[in-house]
Image (cartoon, rainbow, N blue to C red; front, side):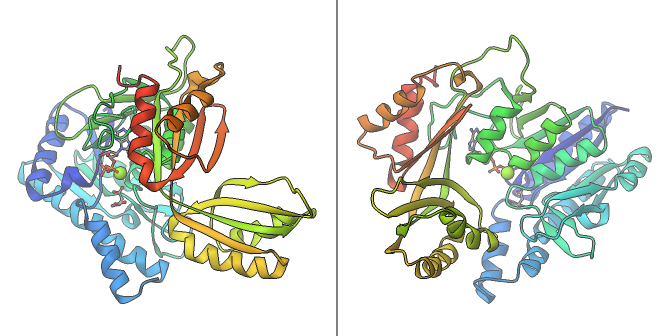
Length: 404
Ligand code: ADP
Ligand code: ASP
Ligand code: MG
């Protein structure tokens, strides 16, 4: 029988009434003869609440214990959804990530899935039951509970779909597809019919939280189409697929942004071979990921070096850089954790010159200063002050005619 894997995000399971509605949708699919695996998130706001609770005890809780508490949010919704299904006469079993045996590495709070043992789920499906799985979590070799990073239920769903060789992956959320940009920031944003994995990978990695990036990586690796749909209304949603010849190529398919950015600069570092490594190695050893880098050409015997990191790592990275500055006899360290990154994404930008200059002009016309720039074949990113985020995204959306 054809198997569908569906994922329902936090707003889709926000209350018992929501859960009952989702159960009706699943039961209807089951009645059509499909096998269904449903992956659910915690009720909206719950993961934040659990995180805040942990921080009341310890502002920097142990990552292992944080995973133990965070994983409980999803355990509540799987039980409620299974109960709702059973109450509607649809047989169902719920499982936590550890029960399924979603094996991950041991990187607490951002674990990666290594393997999924789908046997138990298969048995349930063969017995005619809907299987409800807790998103966002797994277990490591040693039996510790792990979580997959914010938005990780998307990845659970896609990984399960790949493991079970599902016909379709369906991600149900609170918007009816992937838009040209976040419709909450630009009301004129337009739903996209189709998008390539490559474009969605860029959109996700650049901050469009509608899909967690790892879910898109999985979908692309196994080449299975991914459809983003609304939990609340029927519609075609957005289909994310492999790039095909003859696919209509718009220059810019979307604008992504990321509010979680911070930048650090080390000024007046004696310029010598190995300086970049000396600055970044201690940062990397502390597990802090570096995104953009600008290394100025030395005018005298010293140089300046700027890089961006996740805002949560700002204080830690600042302290490390101050130690490095002392060791390297640099002049000073400065930083700013009130910056954001705005990016234009589109496979169609490859053959076109002039997109970057049009982008910079549109921002300049609004009086927005660009602090950093980075480009790849299918994206251009800029770093600007946080207060200009909405203005900048709207200006670019209109400059590139994305509402049309
Ligand atoms: P869920 O809880 O269902 O996983 P998320 O909040 O993680 O939902 O993701 C959906 C949200 O992503 C939308 O409500 C929207 O605000 C945001 N979003 C950001 N960029 C986009 C985009 N390009 N298209 C659609 N939604 C986007
Ligand atoms: N509940 C987790 C979060 O809020 C995982 C998810 O919703 O995908 O990030
Ligand atoms: Mg999400």
